[in-house]
Length: 205
Length: 420
Image (cartoon, rainbow over all chains, first blue to last red; front, side, top):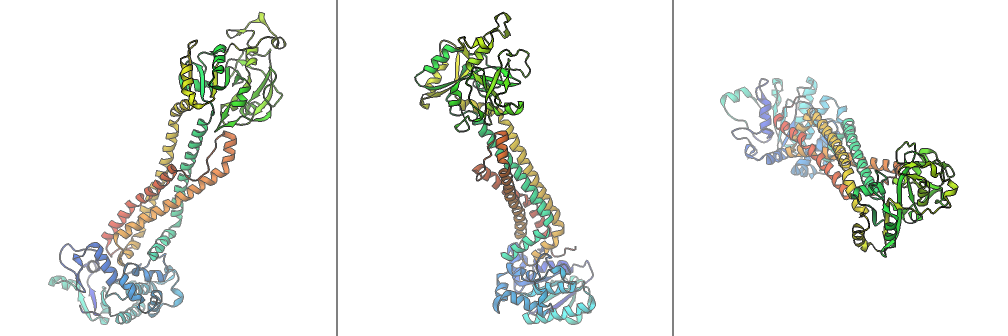
């Protein structure tokens, strides 16, 4: 994939979409083969280095329950920076990292009065935007999203995707999104069906 | 990192009811442990302080512990007496500073009667050199005066001036009573927390006087001597049961001990009170070890409870762990998180328990001292206590390892696909 490219992975449920994402994220290590992300074979990294690599270069959005319920919205957004000094440095490049987080939240449509509030007060749609802000803060190279819109109603889905893509362009990040929803295809540069890839026997990335 | 730390605290706080209960269980167990420890130390100290300032206890030849038991603790009986002649000779020894004679064998309603003399009030010391003092009244002056310990006064409701009849023998109920020669209470001693509190003290001459018309444990009717007539008689005792000896110099203690142990006229024993007390404590001390062990078991139970609570909460915290992993937290961070949580809970519990124990000590020590004669030490923790408290915190951290390990395995197995 090229930098800034947006890939939609589709496929039947149980088809290994989420497993592929876990492999790409380096949370799960493969038994064999290589996984190359921005010139690094993460399958050959040590567990520690792999965790560090994920913290620095990958932002992740889950399907739902993305947030730590006992932290404020801002706490949740700032969480990855604690594990990623380079991303923290990037988040501080134009000012305070908290200000940066607020800017991202605002751009994703969350008003200031929500930033210090409890995450439990937010709707599912708002929670997903906070998750997106957490994935985007400090401008990581790759965003992995596992059906981030499936818990949302169609109107919120469209709004979420549009806001996410706007921010993706501004940080020039590559997106790999898994979804069973083929209607989202129009937004993506490239759409791959996992069962096709598997049949050809090729690898992703 | 501060954000991570803050979130960990918030996470624990979000589970505050279980966290609080867990902490409370640990706190109570620590309170129990410290309470038992303080009482143990106090009991041991009070035991060792039963008698102080006395260099040697002298009695008829017997075991060290037996001599200590009957002469100081008023438990059991002497096998034989010391003749008055030997007693005089020991008193006259150039290295002897003072001698307190002790004459036992009679009782009053279950309390031992002890014959002695003025030296007892002058030289008897307990708890680090404290002297006997009077709660009311004064020393015995008249032949038939008695000075009672505070437990005797309390149990029998006696006050200065009340009459008192001594019974022959040491049973709780005795039918052979010296009722022809009643005593009058001249004084009540202040509480000492020692067997002195349970003793009726009379003069050596009085012991002699009530026995003039007795022979071999029965009253001889034909020799009935009245209380008035007996005052005219010579009342020099023929023997005493034991003697407490104070020396001019402690350096001569072993020399005098050998002198008494090798005394030719009759078989005598001289024991060092400290040594005999230590021997006796070794017998009694098994209970203290058992108490300590039980209180530590309670602490272990509380820690096991905490482990259960943390393990149980893991199920609902899988999502939390997955999120932390997704933002780059290492498995070791997750392990550390749970170990730190267990450690922090334990540490809070230990501190709270320590504070609670000392609050209770502060509130109760006056009462315990007055009622039981136990002086509860209220200082900074000693090394032994600190070591145990520190090991409890370490054990608490260790109790977090198993849940931490489980969380670590779960976070690896879950990958990114946890579904709540």
